[in-house]
Amino acid sequence: MTAHAFDAAIALSDAGEGRWQGQTSPAYANMVGPFGGVTAAQALAAVLRHPALLGEPVALTVNFASAVADGPFEVVATPARTNRSTQHWSVQMLQDSQAVLTGTVFTALRRDTWGAVEHPLPAVPRPADVPLAQGPARVEWVKRYEMRFVDGALPVDWHGHDLGDSRTRLWMRDDPPRALDFASLTALADVFFPRIWRRRPVFVPIGTVTMTVYFHAGAAQLSQVGEGHLLGQAQAQAFRGGYFDQTAQLWNEAGDLLATTHQVVYYKE
Image 1 (cartoon, rainbow, N blue to C red):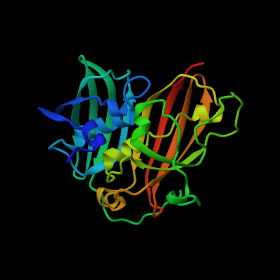
Image 2: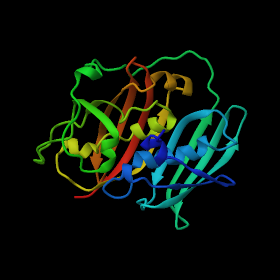
Image 3: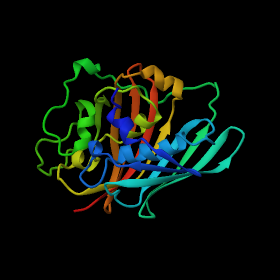
Image 4: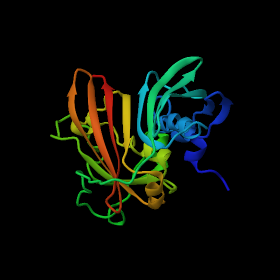
């Protein structure tokens, strides 16, 4: 059986002592270098494969120090501190012995406790009732995802007028469908196009500088999603001085909030 393109992209070979060798994938190519979501997933994959791993991911932060060049890379994952039920990791992705990504991962043993969600699933049509996004893709990685925009799709008319808000809501999943896990959820958290293009449709250069994903579900709950769709909702808070932030929530079809994410993006005018 041929491996799913995503699994091929995040495949790593053990180089010993917490070091892992990988290769960028042309299937996830972006305008400059690879899709940031798959790069973040590669960094997380090094922790998930580490023999010293304790528990499951609760939070991941990656800082894109430089554009990742097409070709080989090395990921170094180091457990900085291990406690009885929590673990803190530092991660680096290297090319030519230089850091192109730095990051941290927090893992923990999850416990059964009281819980509540203050961001319920919005009232939106089901995935089958939302048309599949059509049209040519500017970059290759977009072809790896099924996207069904409820509202806030990529603008058709790049007129430059302020649209008033930057919110997007869409149903999404891997294409072809793939069972959800922490790595694919990490990549899906970065599927949203830059909010500045939605707020004021001008095709300005952009680049994510830092991205954090908070995982609100464990592996067992993610496995129950299977190949189902996730609803993603993204919106910015402020655009100023060449940087903006955007935050997003991702729910499964049953209405469970699986992850929230926040990133800061550079833009140039």
